[in-house]
Image (tube, rainbow, N blue to C red; front, top):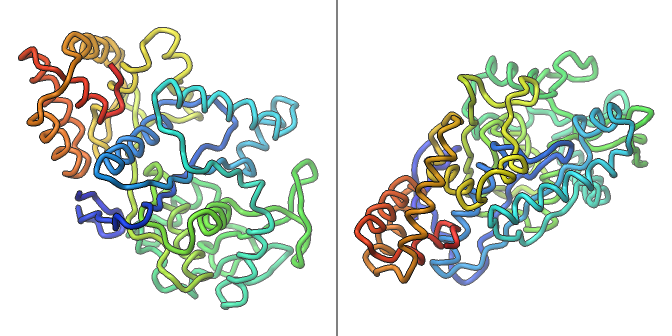
Length: 374
């Protein structure tokens, strides 16, 4: 199998050993709203990968966290006048229903950030002890100048990093920072936010430290593959890598994999623009198998745009596959496997199944490799 590695900026072999589980971490949801198309595209990507790894013979331990300590969740809870954990529980349950409907395999573990406060405190202590962080104004900051490899996941220049940090909660004008790109590991809570005691003062963890602590606790110091949406490359994954390697002294991730952003009407889908397509609404009108097919038919490294024609086309394709359900020929299975092993080329896999269905051959086994149960 060969997959694109974000840090290497190249398609390289992905060959975890067969004598132990594949260790995989994918950044999960912040549970303050419904599952949208971007979420589904990301998690379906990793589901197809996991299915192929299992097909090869691997055991896969995929950890997908729930970020239930984060600014957007607290802001939405304030807006609705509800407790943040009640909001999180409801949205997490809705997300799970969507994932089950889309036939996404259950994860090995789905830990909440709130479960990791002791781990986070210990992790921050490790980073401080190794000289990679400093305490200022009741907060603990990671010192990016202490980590020469900072920037080697994203390969962004400083101006781009500053721009993305400003867009994604980096608070560049924080007077306690030595460098605008330094990022918070621990900081004081607002009066209506949860707070935990530490030797640096009461407060709550920063966003990035939560995933590092959970990955270390659930999978160990080095994981085979780390995934998420492309919007997480910087600052989230860049910061995760820096603080994890600063804490343990070991490589954090062997392979970085990212899903593209999806657009609608020429604009990136985002909550701020109000142009999201929600999975639970799609499920009221369309077969979840067609939804899965409509999404996974796109190559994971090619940004694509939602259109109203996508679901009718996917529904027609599902009907053709259903009409050809049955045992797949070895040649079709070999073609689909080869496509998936070639940087997860799902469009080529779909085309092979389409051709077999058009010839009247059975496609059921091949469809199941893509997570489509006919």
